[in-house]
Length: 285
Image 1: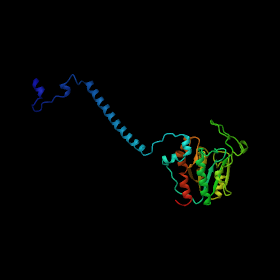
Image 2: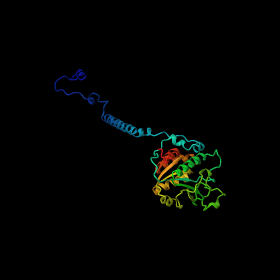
Image 3: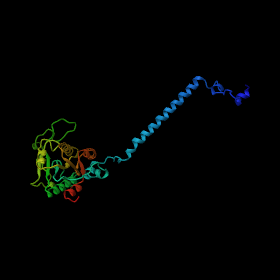
Image 4: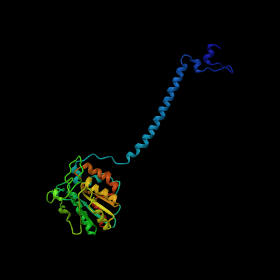
């Protein structure tokens, strides 16, 4: 075979064709050929992994767009003076569905030693809304339970707590545990004194409510993340339906207030505004 035959290929029938290894004997040697196979195989594996990663990113990133973005922190005064602001800016996972025939209002720690006696105090709207709820419940002959606190648990904590370890009103200034005048206490109201955060702890509240045939409690008061939340958790554990009047409660810690409203209360009950609750109590909803 001549050199021209090699360049054109041998046209004779049955003549063997030239392979790349024969045509470029110095370029495609054994080791180089094996290296190319490894490179192409590695590239194929990377392509498969990239495709899998893209699929997973699509599957897990889509649901994030469904929920609202977290709002930035706001000063406590704004949250306290307008405690319903967080509710109108976020859609709660639970909403008030109904009021049981025998529901009770339980107001937590709205007393003179805790609520500042100033018209411009952050807790003023809370007191006003709680008083409105109490009026609506009394008008319908539903139980109103007014709770004050005269002590605290003795356990040591990092944060100093007024009244911690005390056992009675003697540890506080005169009038400290008196309920605020705006609640307009009536002879039909039920008064409960607690010495722990929860209004159910060693107070007889559960027995009182069961004797009255109560199956649902509406909670309001101060502080959202302490007395109110502790009572809500206990009420839920005792088997009551729980309703949280979110604009009738506040907390000196704005972050703690929002945490209770947004994360804790939807797991222990239903949330609503004072207007929504009073409308149901009065039978207009």
